[in-house]
Amino acid sequence: VSRIAVLTSGGDSPGMNAAIRAVVRTGNYYGLEVYGIMRGYQGLLEDDIYRMDNRSVANIIQRGGTILKTARCKEFRTPEGRKKAYDNLKARNIDGLVIIGGDGSFRGAVEFSREFDIACIGLAGTIDKDIQGTDFTIGFDTAVNTAVQAIDKIRDTMDAHDRIFIIEVMGRDAGYIALHSGIATGAENILIPEQKTDIEALVASLQEKERRKKLVNLIVVAEGDEFGGANEVARVIKERMPQAEARVAILGHIQRGGAPTCLDRLIASRMGYHAVECLIQGRRNVFVGIMNNKMNYVPLEKVGKKKGTINEEWMKIVKILAS
Ligand code: ATP
Image: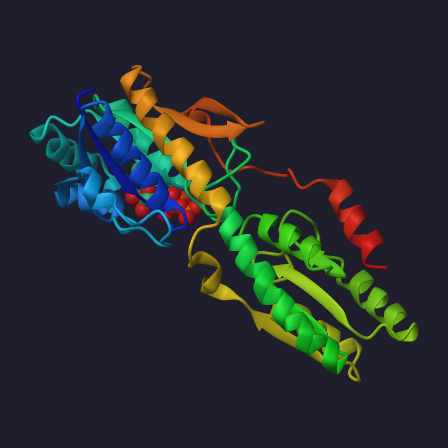
């Protein structure tokens, strides 16, 4: 490869900027021409592509969001759309593409590389951590630390008033944010999409704690928990325990923003560097993850959502430590 481009796609996540910076600076270090594509595949279709030098990524390593912006793009799902995208790359002789996004973005890249001669490299940029082939995804550590800070604050007021608090964190398909932030804040219960929510057992445990005069109870719920999120859980608790003060807080999009943590900046920098190394070494259509602190390369078409990896032992720890 001699000319490469980078884009961010799907939901944004803190640390994407650090990854863009790493791709741009590594590419320039090796004498490649590096281009940035605005708004993911949408900008690729619309030819919103510009040259990036080292200065264009100055002072962004600490910023949340993505300077390249991100989008979802229906047209890229069609062969005609992808043809347009290819023509725009071809016109600039760009033959390597780094895609920072989630598994949907990788599926798009797989289609694209099947049809056209473009080497695609995927980096996991998602706060959900639910991507196979990597222990870390760019943004998870920041999101979970934001959730922990917010829950700590709510816990102070909860404690002052003897309340049950039901806090909803992000995670439509994955419970990692809920599980990690819940254990780190001493939650009594953690409800995640990967496990059936036994609401009767939950109410029974709250009633038992009430009898023991343990009135402060923190329940962390992933938005995609099969019971339907924090409001639904609160409704049932209030039905069964009308005397209890149960409040809901939905943390929402604050979890996506903010300055990336040291860990997210570090893994984004390593992954971005290795993405360019891959292109230079002639690797095509691979995903660059980190496992057991080593780079892990997986064919892009084999990378999907991580499923069912929630550790039973962790749930046992939650139960024991909250008693
Ligand atoms: P997040 O995990 O944050 O949702 P994602 O990368 O999974 O990120 P998606 O919306 O699923 O987000 O995908 C991003 C974009 O990738 C889509 O808008 C579309 O342009 C492209 N894409 C997804 N799946 C395909 C596919 N099967 N074929 C072609 N393009 C696709």
